[in-house]
Amino acid sequence: MLAPLDDLEKALARLPGFGRRSAARAALALVREPARLLDPLFLALSAARDKVRCCSRCGAFTTVDRDPCDTCTDATRDGSVLCVVEDPADIVTVEASGAFKGRYHALGGKLSPSRRMGPERLRFAELVDRVVREGVAEVLLALSTDMEGDATAGYAAELLKGTGAKVTRLAFGLPADSGIAYSDPLTLKRAIVHRIPQ
Image 1: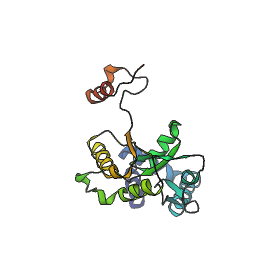
Image 2: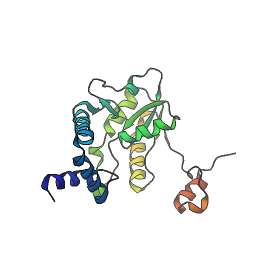
Image 3: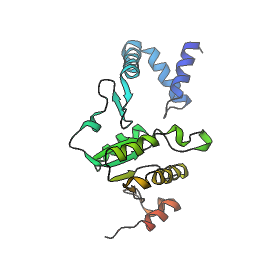
Image 4: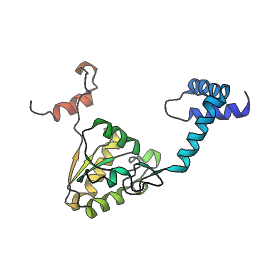
């Protein structure tokens, strides 16, 4: 294979959702139709690299000319509630639900000794500072329910103890439109433990 095409395939294969075969197909399609596919992709990638940043306040994706981001500066949002997520992409997911109207704080990952991700590499200090400075009444921890997410939530809750803010966590339960036969034992256990009145 040609070195530039091989390099393009390897770069695409590093993206989430791309396996080796799909990366190879995408690379071939890009070079087959450069004017229609490759050139616009190159321009979009260049613009994203130059103009997209993380908000200095919450860590969400924003542009260099909108920092703090629109969510942080939106006066209609409830500043007394702060939703803590692992990654800026999680903010997009929570927003899509339409259920949360407060502000956000992205930690930039979760605690993971195996990946050498300790508390000093995450935005915990900024979280505590925001809660105190902004007078946040409730911190909603919207973190993964795996072992690392649970450890991160526990660490955050411990740090926030002296701030006066109530610390809550997303409810655990079964996915919508799913039967209990398809649920794993841990999810089912959490759904039973955190059951709600009907």
